[in-house]
Length: 227
Image (cartoon, rainbow, N blue to C red):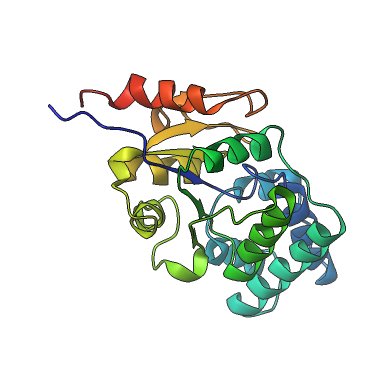
């Protein structure tokens, strides 16, 4: 048997670090309505955590007469505009990250948003905490197979120089949780706008409010030590 130690933490972005899903939903609805279509909550929630190409395909089916790449660029730009106006931080995430950084624990961002949005969030977080937060950023631009494929999380662990088996990941969606779990990371679900099937996480927490580094280490040990 091999004893593992927590050596890195991987964070999803939308819905996990920031509650940006309402921003995406607003951008989707505005775009569909501009083409005379309708976009309801059920359609919007079905896209939470999925790859942007898939989202663009469904928007095209709803009547948006634009190429996939144009739809992706439009939605991403609209979300960035809203984030610049107000960053919707999730509770506890900044405090937990500050403690991890103080302990020297590497952090990677693993998101299916495009690189521009990921870097915008990274810059805002660096300013909040007064130091560089992410040791690596894996975005939709960096993978050939989006979540729920494990590629993104495997790439995130490799980018911070650790084995995926020695990481813990935070996710808010079923797509993302499936990606992290299948990659081999201890996966903590923090469902927000949609439910996450129990079988695609090791544990599910209500939020990160009040969560400390010790809680992460204990959760990791419950699922990995002696594996």
